[in-house]
Amino acid sequence: QELRPKSLDIKQEELGDMVEKEMASTSEAIEDAVRRIEEMMSQARSESSGVKLEVNERILNSCTDLMKAIRLLVTTSTNLQKEIVESGRGAATTQEFYAKNSRWTEGLISASKAVGWGATQLVESADRVVLHTGKYEELIVCSHEIAASTAQLVAASKVKAEKSSRNLGRLQECSRNVNEMAANVVASTKSGQEQIEEKDTMDFSGMSLIKLKKEEMETQVKVLELEKRLEGERVRLGELRKQHYALAGAYDAAEDGEAKPAPAPRRGILKKPPLAQKP
Image (cartoon, rainbow, N blue to C red; front, side, top):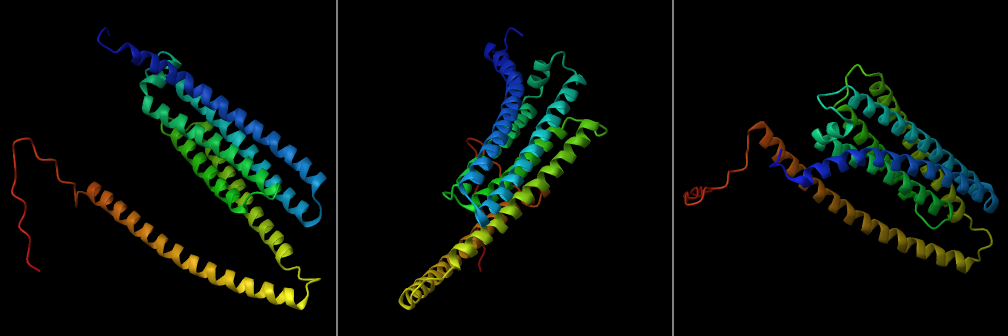
């Protein structure tokens, strides 16, 4: 005990406190997100009408449902953590338990942060979409990120939970609900985007013949530019996937024992390189 570094105890205590603080911070972020969505809803009703109001309401309602699902998930996750700690696991106090399982604790903190960050980003993206200063794609990406971060939180909580735990079952159910609500946000965003773009781009009434011809030529140029850009992005995606599969294959082979990385040579021992084979 005397030889142990004094800073270690401080870090362990901070680690234990950090879990509770981070979960509380995540809950506050979600509550704040719900309030901001309600404010956006009232603002949208006063400043927009027709198709835009309908689209904004549909998107914001789906975001509200997602936030409520996340709030329930965080509450259930907190209850499960308390259950895990109270079960003992050889630790006398809550702080000692988190310190003893520091790697698991850090994973839990990271997952909680990711959930809170995702909720904040979703609200900011929704705000920009409602104000027509953002992109619908941002909302879709944020929804996917939230689904991924909630899966991370469930996985982190599941590691030390009893398989028969009721709270674990509830947490898994909450996770499925979050995924469903995130999918609803994506669906409402895509349908809303199609409605708005169709209304904005397909209204040609009041255009003169010269104006129509000019718009037609500009659209042809834009189509060619987009086709060229799409082809370039497809090539880039293909190269990224090649690299991904190559790295994943190397790791899988190493795990299976088929191809393991060569150990670093010991100091003072030099080995002849293998002779190159003739083609």
